[in-house]
Image (cartoon, rainbow, N blue to C red; front, side, top):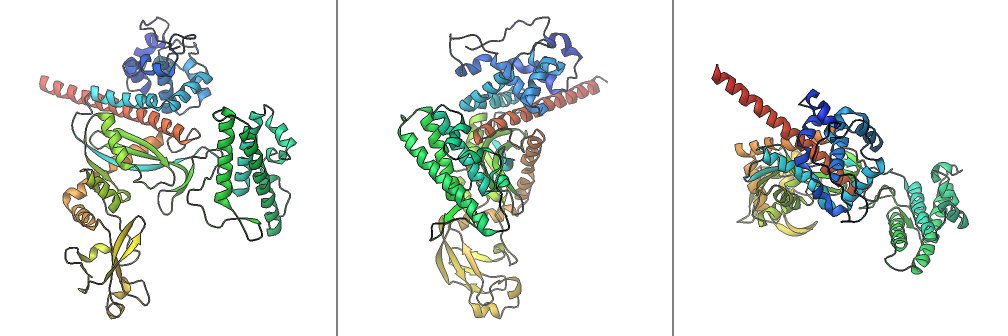
Amino acid sequence: MLGRRSPQMTIEQADALYLDQMDPEWFHYRLAKNRARLFKDEDFKGLYCSGNGRPSVPPSLLAVALLLQVHDDVSDEEAVHRASWDVRWCVALGVPVGSKPFAKSTLQLFRSQLVLHPENGEAVFLASIEEAKRLGLLKDKPLTVAVDTTPVFGRGAVEDTYNLLATGIVKLVRAMAAADECDPQDWAAAHDLKRFFAGSIKGEAAINWDEQAERDALLASIVGDARRLLVLAGKRRAELNAGMPEYLLIGEASELLCQLLAQDVDTDENGKPFIKEETAKDRIPSAHDPDMRHGRKSASSRFDGHKAGIAVDTETGLAVGLDVLPGNAPDNHGVMDLVKDAEANTGCPVDTTIGDCAYGDGNTRREFADAKRKLVAKVPSRPQGQLSKDQFIIDLDNGCVTCPAGHTTRTCANVKNNKHVAKRFYFPADLCAACPRRSECVKSKTGGRTISIHPDEALLQAARAYQRTEQGKQDTRTRQVVEHYIARLIQLGMRQSRYVGRKKARLQLLLTATVANLTRTWNHCESTQETDNKKTQKKAS
């Protein structure tokens, strides 16, 4: 049942005793002053039964505790300790010192409920936007937002193929043991799978790793056990009623193990398994966190985990839209949804969206153009040691391309490129061979230069022209506000996911952005107040 905070302050509360002794610039002080307005118990009533059971710990208190935990970057156990004995925490929470207002399991359960009911997690973040509106920082007018992504390292252990398959086997064994109501290790011993519970299968294997034959034999035995277990799981699942928890758990674990086998292992013509040389497109690097993916933020920066997508209002520096993407998703994935979320969160239309070159491709520009939205992003440039494409004169009306040396070609053909059909123009090989600029233009030893024309080349040309203007350069400089915000998120611990799974990582992002937004809002208002006071004093003198 929903527990509610008493509106009456008692003399034992830490804020009644110590609030006036705290530094007004502390986050804890500001949270104590504003918590009653930010979070109300009724905002979380959907998480509790109505009129049934004993009253819970007030959810408004737990919401404040989660923000303090993010701000101070502490564990659940440390959060419980600080809520009992740290005067700053007790003041922010509005509880007596030494009272132990909640247990660790209570905090964990509340966080789990926010994951299961994402609208309540969103409500915590929206409270920071409402605070910015109330204090006049965020105005009711069209917004210009800057968008970007940043890597979030996954919580799960990243393993090689041997240990990855072993972990997948252990997860399925646990699901099978739960269905049979027995200890997982006993179940494993009864089905000749106990070695997978002895530790790292690769570390425990008594083989010569320099010998290919011994490595192959170990892999074959692991794959054989995995396939045998999948057969047992299929039979056991057929005995259960669809919809039962055990039925679903076995299904999820079986699907994961099948994915791990398919992505990493292939079979030769003799039926002998071997590890694939190429990395699968959507490879799962961790069986502990199947939502993790191999990701790249740049050609040289690789990570395993997720990507946090962020939309920041360029005028206020506040996050207004958030999302967590798979680690292998392109930066521009779902950017339109991110912009729409920013509008829904603020109640203000987004007039302009600014991004880096990851958002400047033709497909993204077409999506924004079709939606009658303005997108400012540098057109990706891929010269690869050649004269870049924007140095050529592309005449779309007359269907010709002129190179920097003044040669024109109309020879072209349609070629399929990813999701669209592009038109490719060809310069004659003999013409390029005689050109004095060949060495800086043509990579081919025998052919001539080619130029590919995107179906939305007109949009790309307009973007190239705009980015050379003073306003275009100013917009590019404005984009740095999102980079500054990302730096603040990283400072608050967002580089590393605290929890397993993308949904939990999203809740962490919402809480972290809430702390960043509130801090920025309160700092701005304090700075504005100081400026106003100085002006008043100057007039008086």
